[in-house]
Image (tube, rainbow, N blue to C red; front, side):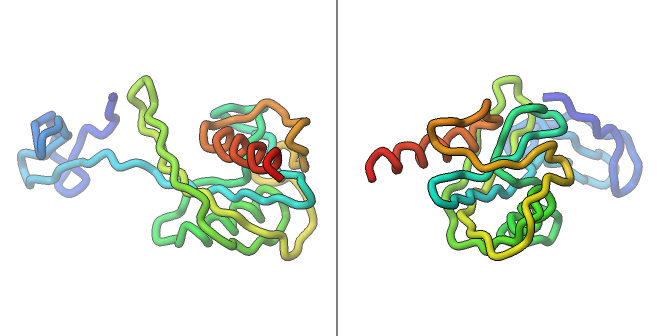
Length: 169
């Protein structure tokens, strides 16, 4: 895994690779600072209305042009539920209320890149008007039998569960 941090954020000295807590980590020999590569946290929302699921078409990479559940990164100090609500509004124009936690996903990257931890929430629409915005090129409702090409393992996993639950009804 490549690291682009070469200088200490505390004292400015060059960082060196050292084994710390059983792993090689960028470390400052001057002040003892250890640079930990912590994963990002993302929040997504699963919104279903009358057997239709709400998806957004991605306008940016990764997976540009594919469809995913509305969501994005949790800001520092932000509650993940609030991040899910904010991202749903930013990408779809809809105001939502989170009803429950669905799952927490972590799919390690095969190339060693940092992979986010994704927190998935179920939500219901409570207002707003459907309109693609932010990094969503389009926003649309889909039935389980007419889904577009999906982005991200977390979206695919939740859609698969949803389709299975519909077949059991």
